[in-house]
Length: 118
Image: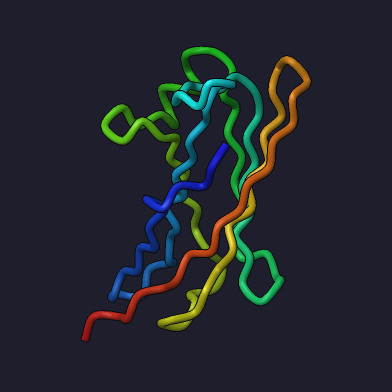
C-alpha cells in the first residue's frame, strides 16, 4: 500500500472547509497494482493533531465503486479538514488497511499545502 503523490489539497477561496483528496495504491507480491479487499482508515495530521479522518469499506462491489478511480487506478478519499493548514504547511496522511485475509498494512506521506489564490 502507498499513499500516492497524487494526493491533492483542495482549498475553496469562498471559505468552505478545506479537503484533502487522499489517493492510495495497492500492490501485489510482484509489485503490480491491484485492488484491495478489506477496511481502509485514513487520518490527516497537522502538528500531531488529527484534523481529518475517514474510513472506507472496500469489501464487495459497492465499496470499490464508491472509492475506486479507474483513470488513476487509485482509491480516492476526499477528507474534509477541521482546520485549514496555512500555505506551505505540511500535513501528514496516515493510512491503515485491514485485509479480509488478516493482513495489516500502513503507509504515510507528507502533503504540503499550496499558496492560496489571491
